[in-house]
Length: 237
Image (tube, rainbow, N blue to C red; front, side, top):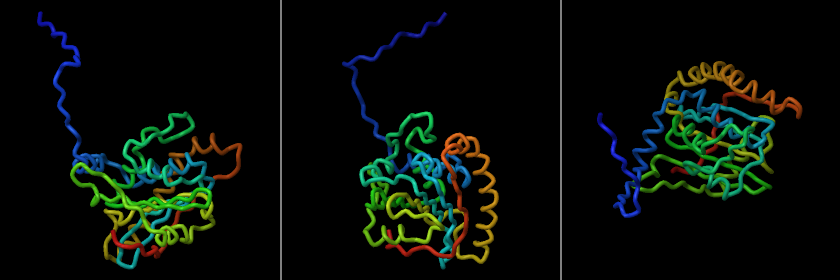
């Protein structure tokens, strides 16, 4: 009978460092297989974790036919350091039972599964900050993000967002140029229309029990889901 030799780990063993390749790693996890419904639900998870009472989900079509997914909430918002951590792959997350996000990957994976670039703008205690992550900025062994100037932050925070008010606290996530429905085509608005009702149904099923348990005794929780032909003009990447 063949026995397996006992091979223990010794401090004297030679160690070889094999750092991951950020470009290939992120390109791989982008292909995990998120549907658009699942990606939206993962981003909404963060809004619920932030104790939002209202969430707006909007598909906005720019004049050149590109579609941008915007998810805004009136939750507690994030400070500059909190947003920095939220943009990190494998960010620190609470394991509390009432939280949906656990592993610090949902926001990044959800956004990058749908587009090559996303923006997160947030307001906490009246102070606003915005950062953009783009696959173009992931090179070699480096992963960084772009800090947007105040004029772009104000343009995002100042967008008409239904009845949401996020000037004191809240967060806006923008997935730029949704890959499979963007394009200079007369069919683009129809493609967006075909997404909205199935998405509304999916979110209702996905969050029903959680929202009933979390908000049933504390008041209302509202989803707004719509389409607009407007996007604030931000400077180029």
